[in-house]
Image (cartoon, rainbow, N blue to C red):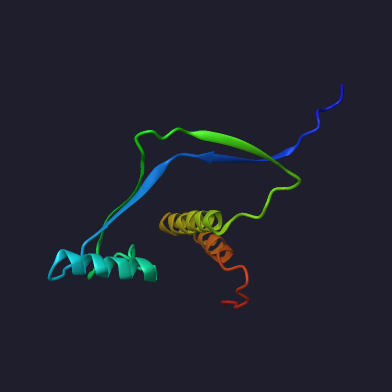
Length: 125
């Protein structure tokens, strides 16, 4: 009995949702507060959580009619991960390194932290 031929599929999962962010801004009026928030958004600093603009809420919320949808796309080989997926992986590794450090697993912590900087040729002796 022969094994079936396996194909590669990139599976996409979609869920309609909205990203809601709330920050605190002190300003003479609401219009100026909105202008300051818009400027921070355009500069990429809206979610920076600073004393001048504390992050109060940041989450994704399903819309009323959201439906989970899957689609399969036949691919010759899996594409390289997009920056969003790389960032998620890097954050998990950083968290795991911190956890290992807190648990006293120094060798593992150093190994994990070092993997975040693969082009770092500096040596510490």
